[in-house]
Image (tube, rainbow over all chains, first blue to last red; front, side):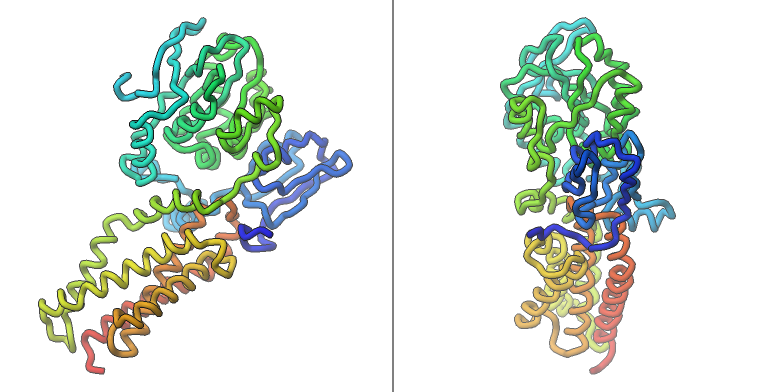
Length: 99
Length: 347
């Protein structure tokens, strides 16, 4: 159904259901509907849709979610490789264009 | 000041001083600015001064919407607030849009808290709710903002165009308002950014190819450089545009999940057409060299579009690049070496 699915089985998203307090915040902030609520607890519905933006982990008050978030952007990763840093799309210093 | 900010139509007095009132309709100048921003013309100049703005005739009970100071973000928000009386709190995201700024850490918990404090939001309104765009959640922890300022963060819809429906539903966004999509129109809007990826190389590289085309078997003819050299320019641009225009435009219909494979597919299809038109040369080594260069170039540019896409993960792109980047570099270098050799050796 979805042509916009990227590579399967690579995503670093993890949810510790025991810590979940059922606040639903992850279902609100996720732009790809990765989470849903079952029996008053969050569950991961479709992990392969996750783009690792990190919004869920950021807004989970119980820190039940972990994900290695960052820019899913080839130019950013290349940028990081060249500078020897983490992937970054930080191009402010050059005063040029940016996303 | 006002001359450069045509969207300000009035001023309103508040407890914290005069606040500019902004238009909810775009004028010709706004539309022209939008076009310029998309085509990267002085893109970073279009920053909104951080602070509080008014829409309509807001009072102390009116809603507060938080935005980035990238002009397009701000423009879409004020347009989405047509017919409402509301406040806008503009953060300093260094002129970057909401989602990217949240990812980079400029649309952050810290910045939201800081702006609430320095602009005395608690004196402008007598309630404790602020509405943030959903995509800012990557950088903002709602519970932290609440802890530090007392303001509850409500995540609004992704698109400012859905704000009216969101308000009417009692601050509830439907599931479709919460999903980021990537339809053709959106993809086309983002293509110009990548067209300028190569900047001045776009002129320098074809110029070098043009000069080199003058060689046959090591002898040089300036006439030949111009009579046949234009073909090399077309070939190079075809590879480049196959990757950064055609592939993004046709993205969901090209097989393969990896952007690099999608780009290679389109690059080679284009190369086949060029070969039929005799653009790639007359001998097999030269034609193969062009296939390698066009394929590698198109594949690389297509892979770059992962940065514009709304669904590629860091882990995924890293996995893709691990195999694709060495392959692309090898293809282009081999192709380049092969092509130069055909200019100097009798085949």
